[in-house]
Length: 348
Image 1 (cartoon, rainbow, N blue to C red):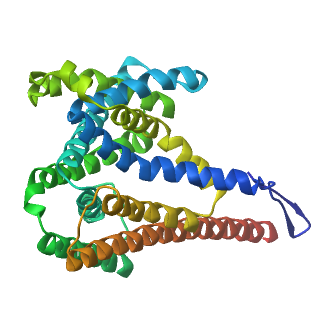
Image 2 (cartoon, helix red, strand yellow):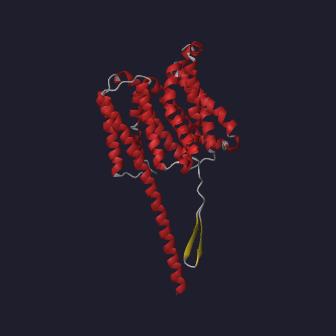
Image 3 (cartoon, rainbow, N blue to C red):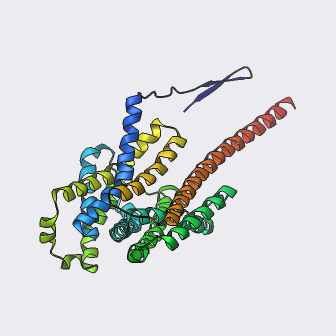
């Protein structure tokens, strides 16, 4: 925190030293974030196609995180009281639903379709947050422009992309994932900001993933995965398939850490560029490695959806910075008014 003092009428501001990072440190941080972020979608797609059991894969990933986090970050773990755990349980169940619907959707969709359809998430978020009672969602002309570009892009992709009818199941689960994910974020924000529970970030990770690992067998029964020959499936998975399963587990474990690490070392603008570049890399991987083919007009639609997502991300960051600046300006004005009132009283 900066320290301020006065000498006469002159404010003296002592600014904290800015941490300097080496070029190698910055480069490695960016590479790790891109590997975890873009790698999450790629590894999940390759792993679920190799294993053929999306819910089992989610269970393995969550069990991996629930076991590893307490070992590597035991000093920061705070799981709160039983009351805190009970209050957080609905968020954990939404977390389970979000992971499960995402993995099932990815199992039935191409990487390109998954990326494009997921670009509709901001549209749903704007609708929900605008009508949410405690929300202060600010809509600008760029917000409207971004949503219009996203919708036009997704519609173009859906109309012109060949073979998209074969991905109907995945698209349905993708829409379900967006609804569950939006609900999870709203519930999470309420219990972390407005009516907070006493749990640390690592505590949230352990609790969410433990609930997910324990819940997955029930969901596997409900969706018929236990009717499959699990032992035979395991035996048929090639070593490369298990490598992707392990990679997906590492991505799920590390994405939060490497994300925060990258944000500390690069500017907000650079971080947003990398986030959107990752989506392009995922689509490119689907084209080059998996042989996904796009109709030219569908490709334009995919580009528009990604462009709209980039505009929306930039707009939200701009609004956040502007809102913070106004809050600081308002606080300073209130302090100046109070100081003038005190001076006026002293002169009287």
